[in-house]
Length: 599
Image 1 (tube, rainbow, N blue to C red):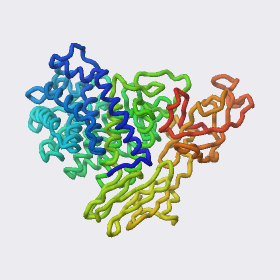
Image 2 (cartoon, rainbow, N blue to C red):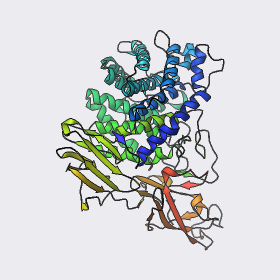
Image 3 (cartoon, rainbow, N blue to C red):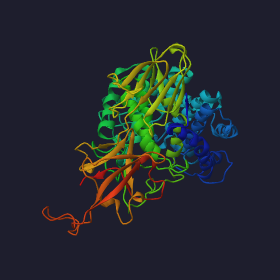
Image 4 (spheres, one colour):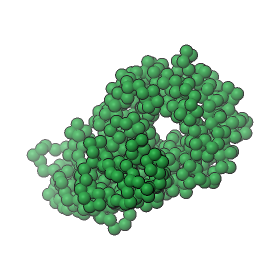
């Protein structure tokens, strides 16, 4: 699978290779992550810097490099890999343990405060980086180190031994992948054991409560996505991975309930999660404030991982693919600047003109954060994005994401190459071309919002599962309907009553202050219900034009009796331009909103 440069997915991958990865490597040095390793072995006199889990930023960067090697075959970072893996090897103890915060500062806390020390979380990212590097480049030096640490955890917490789970789930999905890569079943058994133990009060939860750690209810009985959003979504990815290997139906049943909770009642329109700043957590059902959305980048990344595993579980794949598409083209596209070197940690759907900056929720994208989990997490996702485009079964090849790409068709389906040529979602035309000797059985997802799809100009209707099936020989052109549309929120979402959002294809749109005439405040702009929307495609991604109403601030004060007029009577119309949410914030710190109040 090779992504091309016509569409955004391939362009993001190239930007990731050209700018983001080197930026990460530079910041691993300047932020102290690598010095923390040197400090343990006496090669640095600097104090420990960063959060307890800072080691994971190195491993996520290594994983990004590995997937870029797989994509392009580059040897650009080989010497850097040699250096940092050799450094990790020298820090690792004979037992297999390697965790610089513990080794350098608090040896007494080793496996003693699992709710906060993140030891197994760090190991999870180490394992994922090691597996990726072995698959991509055929080098197993990091894998040897990661297996030694995993074996130590197995000896300590495996079946028949001490009960223990990590306060931050992530190791579960990593252990399943290690099992897949090595065929060592004990890694799968360990992952399953950690899932079985969660929800039995093993963690000392403190003031945040057991639900923050998903330790309040056994996994198979949990009815709601709760607590720290990234933790919940990583856990669900691991649970689904275990189901995929064991076939246990109870785990999949629990994940269906979790999916409905997270996506039908707690997901932002942009594919973001987490409405609370204090604990980076899911809120209550329908608690989705735009301006105070935490919407952490890592939560959407974790949900991509989970959604992909749910897709592979074989039930309603279109639903999961469409969720991944929403997240990629909105929350995650917006999380990194056009330069590839600045990032959002939180991704609100509204920025008030006078909102103050917070450490992890600044007004503008930042080059790095003291808690730097998001930038390398984005890099590893973008580097492996081609893995989410298509799958194959014994019967057919399924195209889940519409992306400019060349796909190697498995021999049992005819071999050869499926070429997908498209500028989607800038353009709805998806050109399909297959060079095999016999027709290719192809299933192409038709998005739920595309009500007037055509194939070579003829209307088409997908099957009940959301996929259009065809025998592809030569070239065909699928056209998806990119008519702009208004979207409303569920009536229980208090924060969004009386407001509407604009969507075009998979993209959510927003309005920025910078696009309004001088003297017009974004907070005073309202729209008529069902106002006409017009696509403008002058350059770059399409924009949407509409008419809005500028409502003058009321002279009646902050609150007034209903019979008093809410305006001074001099409302006026204004031309409004909406842009993709993915591109907001690239022209300075300016007020922005997705949801527009209806007049």
